[in-house]
Length: 508
Ligand code: SAH
Image (cartoon, rainbow, N blue to C red; front, side, top):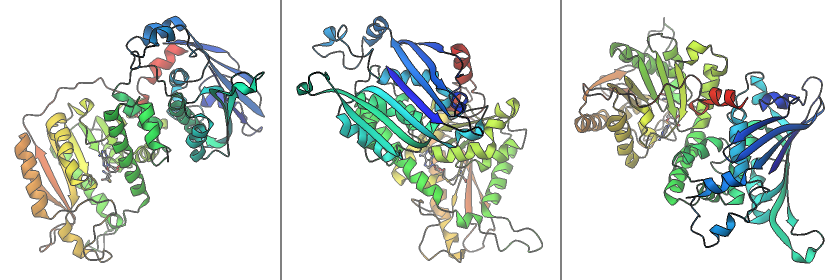
C-alpha cells in the first residue's frame, strides 16, 4: 500500500517544509509499527524546489488475519478463503488510513509547532495513490474528490492485465489529485475517502467513529453532494451511527451558515447607557453577568457549552480562579476560530493546561462532561429545535449534573425595543424560538423540578419596566451535583489532540 504527497517550493518557501508539516524529517527514512504491520515514511525527493513524502504500509498478513476475527463481514461464505487470498497487503485502503492516523497524527490535527502559520496556507500539492480499491470505480472516485476544490482529479481504472485488454479493468483505480490545498485538508479527505472507496472496512466500527468522522470531515464533509454515501460507507452501514452522523452534520452545516451572519443586535450598543460612559454591547454585558454569577457560585471548573467562537472562554482564562475551562461546540469551524482567538498553539504550558476545546453535540450525553462545578449555556438553547431540547436537558441536568448551570436566552418581549428589528421577527436567522419571560420561566422551573435543582432569574441589560430585559438568565443550583470525574485531565489545546504527545513520542 502506497501513497505519495508532493509539493513544490522556492528559496523563501522551500518545498522541504512538507517535512515540518508532516512532522517527519525529510533526511531520515522512518518506520513505525502499527497494529497491522509496519508503516514506512521516506522522501524519494527532497529539495527546495520539489519534495515528495511517501507512505508505504507493509502489512503483516498474520496480524491482519488475527485481528480480522470478529469483524463485521466475517460471516461471508468465503471468509475462510479470504484469509489466504487477500489483496489487503497491496491495495491502499482503510489500513492505509489507519496508518495515516498513527503516523501523521499532528498533521491530521492541523498542528505544527515549527511552522504554525503554514498549516493554514494552501500549498501546491500532488497526491498519488497508484492502486486504490474502488467500489464504484472511477466514477465514484471522481464524485468523491471532484467537489473538494482540487484543480485536477484524475482517476483511471487499472486494467486487470495490461497484456490482455479484453479482460477489462480491475477494481483498482490510480488516483492523482493536484491543486492548491492545505495539507491538513488533503490528509483528512484521504483519511476518510480511501476507506469509503474501498468499502471493506477491516475493523469493528465503534461509536466514537462518528466523532472521528466529524473531526476528519471538518470543513468539507457537511454539504458534500455524496455526504450520505460517505457517511454510510465510512460507518460500515451501521444505520444508527449513520443517522447520528447525518444529524450532526446537519447541525454543523446550520451552525456554519450561522457563523456567517453578523450577530448585529448583540453588538448593538445599549442606548440607555449613560452617554458619559462607553456604551456596552449586549454580548459583553452578558459575559459580565455570567462571570459574576460564576464567581458568586464559587465555581473553579467550568463548562462552556455551545462556546461558539470562544469569547467567554477567553474571559474566563483571564481570571485565575477558573482553574479548568472546557469549551464544547458542535461547529468545528467555530472551534477553529476559538482556538485562533485564544492562540492555543502559542500558549504556555500552564495556561494551556487550563483550557480544552472539544467538538460535541449537546443533544447526546457525554461522560466527559461529568464532575464540573458549573456549566454555562449562553445563547444556545434557542438554536436547538424544540423537540431536541429534552435531550439537551437530560445531557446537562440529568447526566453531567454540575452544581451550577447558567442558561441565557433572548427575551422576545424586548424585541419591540430593537429599532432595526421588523415586527414579529426573531433576532437571528438560526433562532428556532424566542421565549417570553413567562415561557422561559415555565421551562426552567420544570427542568429544575425534574432534576432536583433550584432556579433563580436575573435580567441582563436594561430591565425595561414594560417588556423586561433584552436577555434573560436562569441560575440553577443543586446540592446533589455529580462531582465525580469520570475522565483523566486532558491538557491543553483541542481534545482531539490529547494523547498526541505520548503517542508521537512513542513513535519517534
Ligand atoms: N455561547 C456563545 C455562542 C452562542 S451561538 C455566545 O454566547 O456567544 C450558539 C452556539 O451553539 C453556536 O456556536 C452553535 O454551533 C452551538 N450549538 C448549536 N447547537 C448545538 C448542539 N446541539 N451542540 C453543541 N453546540 C451547539
